[in-house]
Length: 203
Image 1 (cartoon, rainbow, N blue to C red):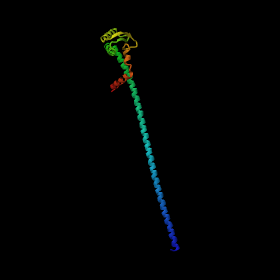
Image 2: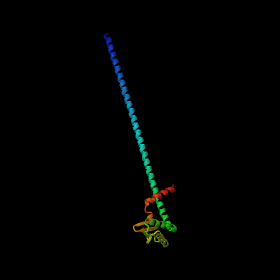
Image 3: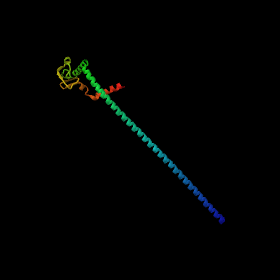
Image 4: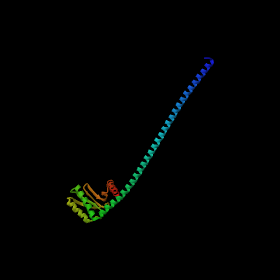
């Protein structure tokens, strides 16, 4: 090979080497670009998923808050309604009992049942009877006869201005309070029963 051919061959070798290196560099650059692009897409998808998850959580939190607020409003409305019902029921119950006491036949049933209950708890006792000031004398004597028929005795009668209706019977340490105040003393239990009946009426 003469010098001219050698130079040409050398130049071709250099050119081929440059081409190979360029192709390798281009392939590596393309690979890196694809990797970067893939990573960018993956990062973007991750950010989108995170944003969607955050939006979902915020939405769920808003819904939960709205539900809690609605339940609170409903609970407060029910409490207000219940309070109103109980106030109405309590007034009706009080008035109904007073009307019962004003009616002679119902009043005697009230006294009779009270006396029978009291003498069953403390048989043979000597009873002091507290009563409203305007309670008729005839009914007092009727109660005296009932007590004697039950084997009990009467210690006496005492008009009490604090008693609007009913009787309070005392024998020793035993007290049977069938006055209006005594019957309505356990307000919590009575209100529970009132509420049951009032809600049943509303139906």
